[in-house]
Image (tube, rainbow, N blue to C red; front, side):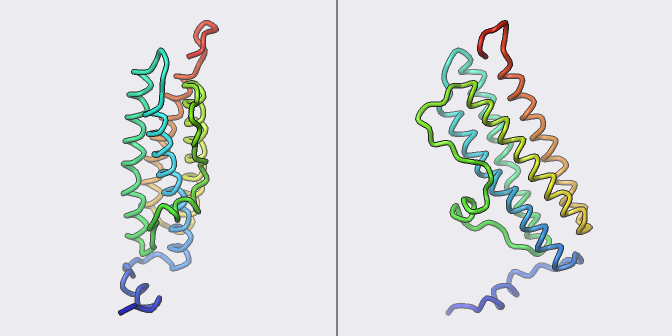
Length: 174
């Protein structure tokens, strides 16, 4: 027995005092952040698995730590959307439609380029989190803004660490 679209929406309707328009806009913005978080997580793990070179151990451990931190944000983001009555990502296909972070399917990427690419991707994630924060703030959703503020801080730290790891040391490539 299939349900109509309206009955499914009613089944998933979560009570909130936020305006329906705000819920829709906040959910859409957070879902982009969620899609980018999954894309960045997978790219970070890809680079973690394929890093090489003289700083292998340090970079391998750094990317493992960062990947774990990124993945840990996904449940909070998705559950926040549901708490306010929105719907969230349901498939890899939907992630692919929403993500703004590009995948990396290259056979080999030099370590420094991996770190630089991840640094830029974290900056893109931060920009999208700031957009979502602005939308949530306009919708009077202080809980979403608070979550995003913490995740922005984490992403800024990841960006800083990646930047420092790619700096030149006495003319030698890091």
